[in-house]
Image (cartoon, rainbow, N blue to C red; front, side, top):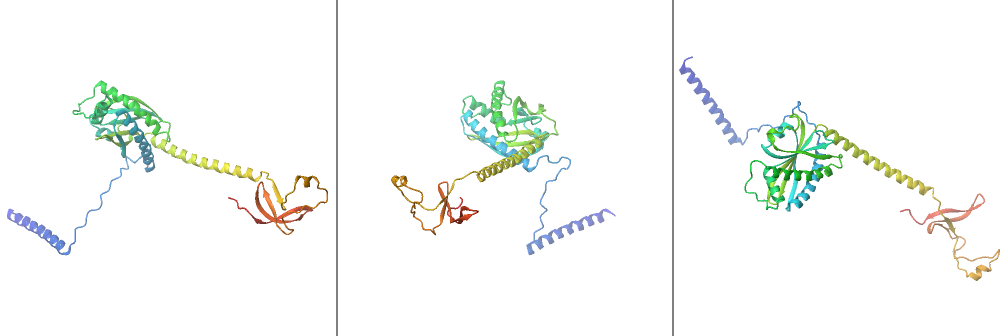
Length: 334
């Protein structure tokens, strides 16, 4: 095939593509038919790295840190003398290297030992927010015109004091799940030189939006997942068992009360009628005397339990003893 034949073939192919394009465009314009959109994109699941935490685990962690955010908001509003608000933005399951790689080089991070959770719990606050907090703690207005590259020793000590305060609220927030004992191990300021845990370690990242007056920033909490799922499952099972035990105790107490009521003794009297006598008339009563009452012979006998009239009936004899047959209930049980 010579060059002219090749050029002719390429020209015919190009014209064919143009005709198909024009044909498709004209049919769309005539019939108003649009090309079918591609299928909705999906997120692939990596079976080599299965998810460790269920939706119930995430919801439990969300409740814990919602409570933590409320307590920390009140504390920071007091210590900084400013309006502070913290809200949970997102909770994600990641590998530690993904979290570490996303951190800026210069950071302010508190490293906590939080038994019985295995591994170190991390709390990171953005650099700009840290300088605002430091300025407010020192009595400033919080308007920091320049954010330096590194933290000084004094600034690190101030933030260390801040982290020691906030870990108290971690203990309170985890109360309903486990007896957390957080202790501050150290402060880290360089993300590239920090190796807290194995890179492949599964962690939960809690992203928190932080607002101090007009300033808006973020902070994050990294919770190691070595045995976190076990702790959350045990707490959930304990809560279920506690509710069952409480319900069983309530039923047992109720049954005991009813059993004591059933076997308790009550004073029951049959009231044939009423009359009024003077003391002198009573003192002169003799055997065989007749006392008139306010009832006729065919009137019902009222059965009085304690001081309340409960039933009425008719008088008779059963097994050679005086008896009353109940005919009506005068008072219903509440």
